[in-house]
Length: 495
Image (tube, rainbow, N blue to C red; front, side, top):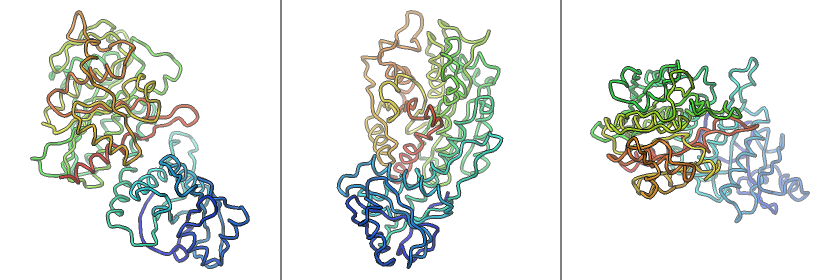
């Protein structure tokens, strides 16, 4: 789907549908007032007769109004002018795009980015681009008869007054973000028999070929053994699929600028290993590579944006399966850092692949390292499916990530990384154990990772509750790509 922004009067713009707002109580928005005048008060009459109340997220589709060039007019209820919230604005956008996608319209003009939505215009535009693309996304490519592609191909955000110049950049950057998000969701939704570590590596190599500023490297298990990645290799021992350590180096500015390193957990299927998971919903463990998918999508997005920043993606990818060669509870391995780890639970495998990837990331002399992982069920219990968990050893970095989450409504919540939790990882036989007990599970997982990140500014995003949806709406969400891309945009703009 394509997006643009321009100034124009709603009755004169050529489009399959023009969208304007109506406030609760029947007050027409500025654009709706202009349309009403052009069609000789038809909109006012409809409101007066109760056909459109203006109730938040209500819609009314009209056809062939006199004096209006567009064959369709969609009225959208905006609710009370002084009672809108982020949640209600998002519901409004979902309602209008659901209605638009139910029409034959191939393009539409939206007059909802000015005062009508009662929020920072850039925020509204970002949400409209993300939500519009979400409604057009299809995840049925493996069906024998996939659904038809969405008819709606182009959205114009129109304003009565001249739009601020920076809003065009907001729309363009967010559109690039949605294309990266589509890659993230497509990869995450693939089953484990297709999306293997080798498949992820091939996708990374394809990105390198498509964008000159991306250099892709893939290390094999023999390379990992030479590097001493005993923790990572302990996870892949039970699988016949070879593990891969994938790196993508995006060089958007002078090499003297230290990069931001994004480390994405890439467990393409997680059975739990010998510590086998329950059978119910185990199919969803194909989503245990959503961190990796978000890194690939983010790298693609910033390459399309041409951001003047250096970013490295590091993806440790493997399967976690039980077999005669699989790691057993109680086994002790030595990580690339030289620290020994007693593996008490083979289902706490994400931290094992990440710890070696985090140690490896130091070779890029990073300014900042952020890991993204579907790491703990405990994070889902703590934060549900609304916010991602955030941990950091740097308060400024944490604030920047939280701010980027607010800008994109891809929110995170910071949890403590206090030394008080570290003793829970003590082992009688190794430098540490890979689990700290049931209490504070998401925190002790982050504490484990922190032991490998002392040499740089680091943050950890636990996306176990936000990376995908279960049930009838099962599917990848693409989060936290909006947060990551906005953080990198902000970093690039601050230089």
